[in-house]
Image (cartoon, rainbow, N blue to C red; front, side, top):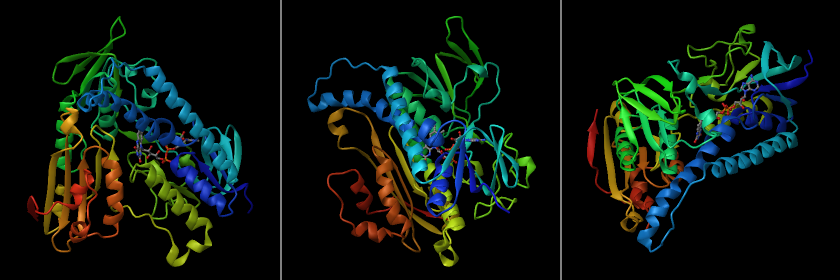
Length: 459
Ligand SMILES: Cc1cc2nc3c(=O)[nH]c(=O)nc-3n(C[C@H](O)[C@H](O)[C@H](O)COP(=O)(O)OP(=O)(O)OC[C@H]3O[C@@H](n4cnc5c(N)ncnc54)[C@H](O)[C@@H]3O)c2cc1C
């Protein structure tokens, strides 16, 4: 049987682009269908534009901090169209890079929405393409609840292109995207309310980290409303939005952003024409090699709902392509994605960087864990006048002396934890941390100078 392609990929996001490029580099004939934007969520409406906004939003604090160092900064003002449009220009530049990268690798890009016709056929714009294998890398889409007035809600898709900047905003959600956008809006000058239906945001993170972050965000002026939600939204004649909350109060704002989760984009994808199985939330069920129940169809990235992060989608796409098309990756070189000890950051203000077990998870799993903690004022803030503290935490398995958890809230936490992640993934012990000479004066040196445990956790 001959096919048009060896591999047909649906979705040119993080996972799809990486799999296409590696497969083509290993000699496969590859096409990728993309219906919105090259580079996917991360490049267009995710990690990259968000981080640019985080940088932008930090200047207000820097201007404030400058005075303590002798600077006189004139009255600062913020122009939203400048940030928005400069960001968009940068994203367009990245789209071009993706286009050239795929072209240079020999991958054919087909613009349009792909649907699965059968186990070896994909339709795009009414045309059928056959392939020995199909990879589904369609990612996810913001999921917003239906409430009266929900048509006025914006999600992370729209927030990057807002016509005007809201003077007052409500962000709804308890995940990292909600927390990050509350910081962005606040830093850029909005009166910011963060609403979450649970009693504390960032479920799954270490409890100290969650509480510390909430406290720091509140100090920066964000109004945190936990155990609260919106029941209805009404648009006023002047264009403002009036939100009614579950506690009975009302809040008038200019924009309401929901970051209440993302749904795998598997609706109307034609999967009913195959044996591919979906879980309850619509994600695609795959085995350890990303193969679905239909042997010629594979899936990677957010659509399989394992760990929804760009580097994870990249690792999955790369492992799959290597295993399928690289003879050198057979036998004992077979590629597996290791989901243990994935370092992550939340670009809240201050940042969170985290790796390994939280205190709550460690208590369940290990017999005895030593907890080292340091809560201090960053040297910069001794003169800046900014009332921000830093928290660092190390969890050590008493039996092996291995560091099993490493958490931080503070400036550049993501950058610091990324470095430590290599050591911890390689099995670093507390003794290794202790014998490492610090870099002085840095905040990061605190990680190698914490001598006495704050307490011991017993199972
Ligand atoms: C606001 C926000 C901030 C984020 N920040 C971070 C961060 O800081 N760090 C991090 O690691 N991760 C972050 N993420 C998550 C990250 O963006 C995703 O984990 C990553 O993009 C997943 O890659 P993917 O390839 O699975 O899907 P995607 O990148 O979503 O790519 C899927 C692609 O498929 C296309 N597509 C969908 N259906 C079809 C179809 N039928 N036919 C053709 N094309 C189709 C889509 O248009 C899209 O381009 C963030 C996400 C959001 C929303």
